[in-house]
Length: 147
Length: 415
Image (cartoon, rainbow over all chains, first blue to last red; front, side, top):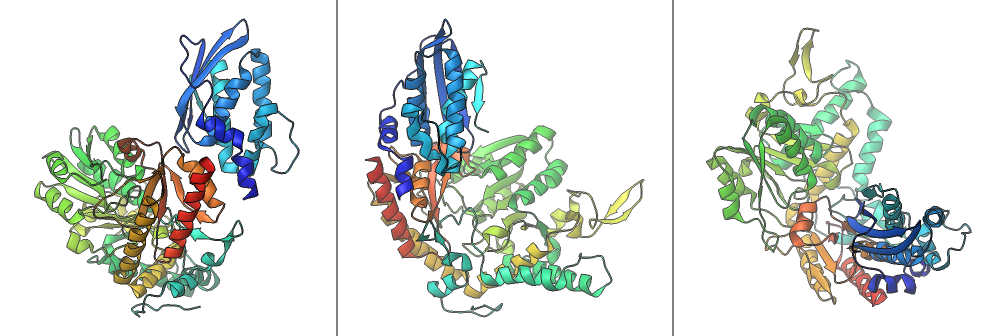
């Protein structure tokens, strides 16, 4: 059961119970809907980008604990960051959750609690849905999919 | 290894049955495998595995072609399997048994062949709200192509068909009623005999999707009087890649071919081709010979135990599981029909089914989570997904207890 607690860490359970920034933004500058056809998870992400900086972010949707906690953690993390940095963070997050289960990973601060997902290949898409949706919103692509 | 010959009956002893299924001896994540995903596919008895191996070891050759010894032996075994399928479903003739890849292909065959010939503009195909995607999408494709209309008969909060609504939905334009014998997402067993009666009274043909029902209860297509019955081998304890379509002979005779190729023709010139007799007209190309033979052996195995005994055992597990799951705080069953088999579809308050699935898997318990290829059913019950445990003849009450224990730990983890 050791690796199960790697996945369901207290921080993740907490963000699942009380997701941060769980709201629709008024007049977002960017929006995308993410969908994971495998599990039916749906996520709407709203951004306000001002002067190249993400000033506000909110999300809504239904999904498993991993996808919800990942979205919540992500919104906390990207708020106040320049778009270029957010894009770089997408790449680093993606590397973290898709790297070899026992290999070393770069520390991503609070986001590192999701590194345990590497041991659960079918759940990687749950953790990355919010990030793909974020990227789609920044690319002004209306729909993101983990497929 | 105990093996059961066709026709021989034996007392039901679940530990003996388990001994026939080698995969049930393996461990998953250090725990004994508790396989409760039978509605997705069942495990295979040793006799089926032996039959596949024996076919490739001793008799591999193409069927219906060669004059050589091996081809004759392979053809005899393949056609022998067809006779076993005929007997299993009590069809009148082997001409009414078409081998396909799976139930999905069986339904597509009817949609593309019977459907294109019979469902014109403004004609209707009636399905139900509880159908698997495989009994929805082929009819959508058909209606898009021909201008036909797809109608849907509703279900109630228990997950039962509302028969008065279904009756009303069958009109003089209805060419075909296509319904599941049993729902994969809810476990509901539909009154298919009544549905056939209502449809025939208004001149509509009936296709029954028997994917889920055929391994839980006896099916007699003559007594049902259905026009088509679709089933899949891998849920009947047989191999993947082999499916069955039963069709009334006069229906199949009147239908154009589905796929074109070798084996389905009588003669071919560049000007025109003529079709082979039934059932070969619908079996283009080299079939899944070993799959058909393996399915035949699986049906022998099922018949050897008998649906009276299998049904009693599974009904006990369903009742026991219903009690065990509903006793857990926050568990709600989706699908509470009065007539049900095998399936325990459920949600846990505040916990997504995928989290449930991942956590119980750590204790060796295999259940399905998701929409079960029945998104309209999820929509009907207002849930994005469910967790689903489904029992087969080799499951035990102890395994239900293991699942229930794991669910209690899911609850604890999420607080």
